[in-house]
Length: 484
Image (cartoon, rainbow, N blue to C red; front, top):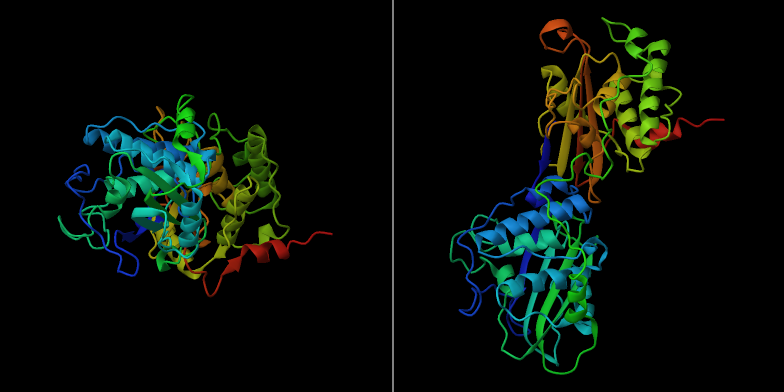
């Protein structure tokens, strides 16, 4: 199985930072001498938390947040800083409160004065900026030394923090930062870590719009706006730092070097062990040829439903015309049934481009290559399966230790249940989920008894624009299965 999760697909900073007076062009500036020194270069996230987060949209699941927190802590360690402490219930906090905790965690670690709280007026302005994927309006009277920033396409506040503070310099792709010393380098970091006069009251406003991103590569994703300013008059606060600090006296969010073991990216647990098929459908199916006979299909379906019962998942109910479908369409149907029966969104349909991509895997008895021009993807391959249901059983219920999964040795490892994880992946909220499937009845090139057997492959992807034409859609499959 191959997975493509790009930083571009998950976070695209707009590079909007305003340190200028109203009416002047926004500009990036290098940090003042009083601000902590910027890193020499950008750091690639370690661990790569993108692999633990949804392909698009906001993701506050524990796995995504905890792996991102580990990446932040590893980057902080390189600056001689301790871990970033966040409350255990961080995922349930409103966006502005999350930003306050993160921003102050970064400022205090560098001996900068914390933000005193979230100003209601600044939050309103930040909301206006997020709604149009732009900087917040200038706050005007009552504030001075204003810093503004905006971003789009991020996964969550920890993703923002990592990109702004640790991956905003040379090598990051940040606008205006092609070489060390360029004006655009570390501008986002310098907003978060801006120095303010001693004794001043620093306030903040932060807001997000889950679908406000207007950028072509992530249209429909999240956008946000941030305002930091020194208050010159009394301001109403919606949340203050003293209250926020009390949350840190309780349990804290635990960083993780990788997503929690035994879970798919959507938090669905893996089976406790590989499930031998009950009934043993291989005794009821052909041992040498593909088999779509009613006897074989019924036996494999019974085994799938037995395995599902151990997970508390309802039985799979196939469309009435399932046996008359092509093998590729059958693969599309069973993968969607595995998702919708676990309350996950289905793939909208099959496309010619994705079918062609999957065919490269089926023809070469391997995972299909990563397709082009997609936000993210997963690929699966199966050799020797007697039919699409048999391939599904192998991917979903017989993919752990002792199975035919070549990436899962008997001692266990990161490749165990990877096919299942791909099928149950978190494909996010941006773009259109598309699928390709292919079948070669004699394409398996494995040595031994499987040589010359079946070869099946699927490509699971998210693309930004919906396809103009479909091979088949899920809506059509559901509509034609009307039962009396």
